[in-house]
Image (cartoon, rainbow, N blue to C red; front, side):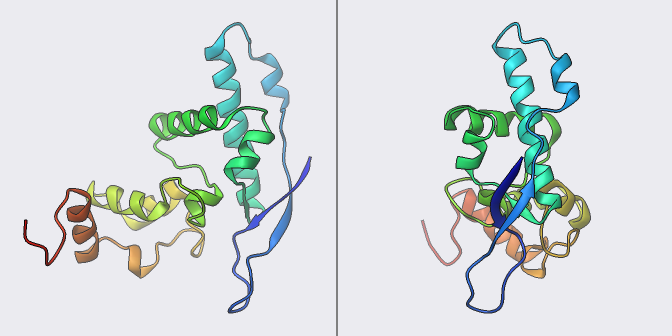
Length: 166
């Protein structure tokens, strides 16, 4: 299926982000072999679909919005959020969506996740792979690399704001 999505490549200075056309596979042959006996089976199928379509869009320089992720597999927003969370918990990988990659919407942005994983000791290449970072497709930009700024952000998350006395 062809679908229009937000592009991951930036246009010239000041120009709006362009939409790009991507080809997505909603139902793959291996999906047909899955039993659909209970809700858990349905969730397994929907997680596979979300993983596949977000990755396919990413490989074509695009990202899907939460609304796309509701419409395409035919599920509601609460289930999409649950399934994205399940995928991240199970595989430790954040699927590339408009919210996480471009900072659109109310989802957890990749910057927060970079800080959290950097504090856990992961290297920049590992972090970039986990969050599908668009900056060079494998590099974390200097502003997001672990270092003093990461420690400050981590302190802010724990309620310690620099220059502020409790």
